[in-house]
Length: 253
Image (cartoon, rainbow, N blue to C red; front, side, top):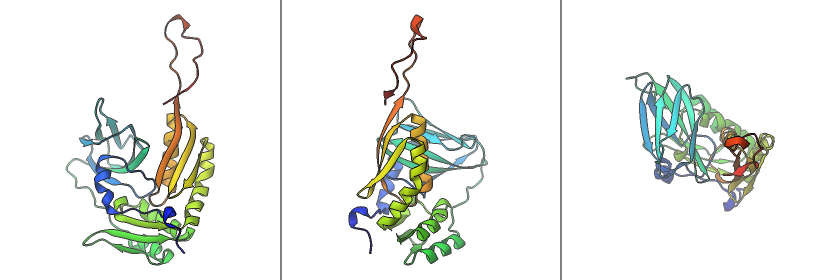
């Protein structure tokens, strides 16, 4: 029996326009977009809102929010692939940045027959088509299905907007339990509320970003995130002769 409607996590292709402008209120594999870049070249993206961005491997590509705007400057550094985390207004998205040599044509993502066959075996009723319109539909009923989907979604076979996933509640709970110890190490905790995942606690900017990366890497499918983390930054040391005096402690951002 499927979980009641409030616990069903679903995604449909109608999110495309939002993904082009603003990080979607979601987490987990697969990525939202794939952006091709050339080594040594820049590319600009206009976002409707952005608070900060972080590249997983800056030796492959860098990302910078231009001061006074919501324009994102992406720069290819060397051939390879890396991930970009974007955050705005309590929401985040993850893009894949693929850097190629100048003039080279980037390879298109393709479904791995082996990974798809494994997922079909573990997830009865799975439907996947690549033409004329790409779509992937499945009900995730147990841990075996979730485990089989994770490497498939980590490949370049699918984008988030092409999926429609429905989760049984025990699968979401098991996924949360698997992430719990790592989040606890970071001083944070997560719980489900309806179809959404609530992340809460107090953390520095760096710890907050590590927690978001953890949620993405360890999860399958898109679950709405309610980010209640109180992010604190240290007070700057006072200027002048009292520079050695301890500050008043962290402040919330």
